[in-house]
Amino acid sequence: MIAEASHIPNAAAATEDFEFLALSEARNYPRALVQEFRPVLRGSIIEIGAGIGQMTRLIRPLPEITRLLSIEPHAPFAARFREALPEAELIEGTIANAPAGEPWDAILSVNVLEHIQADEAELAAYRKLLAPQRGALCLFVPAGPEIYAPIDRDFGHFRRYTRPELKRKLEAAGFTMERLFYYNWVGYFAWWANFRVLKKREFEIAKVRAFDRLIFPVVHTLESSLFRPPLGQSLLAIARAS
Image (cartoon, rainbow, N blue to C red):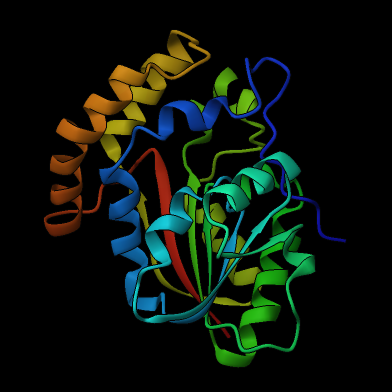
């Protein structure tokens, strides 16, 4: 049985969408993610854990996408998604509710898998949908179990991943790796200092905005053009269903 994705933070959170309040200030970060995944975002796409539509707004205009089905399990977020994007195709549910027997070319999952306790079963469900087309899984998850902090629990995160762990789970589910690398090494140390050491329990909007506008563009340019770091705040994977 596939566990439901839970975007609902734990009781320590001030509001159920406190993760979105500050992260909505980010502009460059999500656009950079879309560009990383864009080579395989074509044809019929499933977006897992659409939330209130932050990534949906960015990928819907891509001309290579012929159909975009967004899935969100949390009813209040789904309602807000529909208000913001009334013409978008949305299912309130989980991957188990995705139409079977249709030709899916890719699945996009950004900061969702860590919310799902049975993550290996979830990956196997993705592979089952993608296998007929040999489709691609575009996956983005938090990295570094050593920097797992109280705020991770507040977000409802079951884990942060290592590169070998994620590779093993993807291959066990029937995927072949195309790309797998750590992402945002500066963010790794910022997370460790703010949330692991100082044990802060919320984002500071001004700092999120400053990082996104001033620091991240430089970090991303270095990582994408010069070197892939040996650690990072997140892991980015593109895996092919085999």
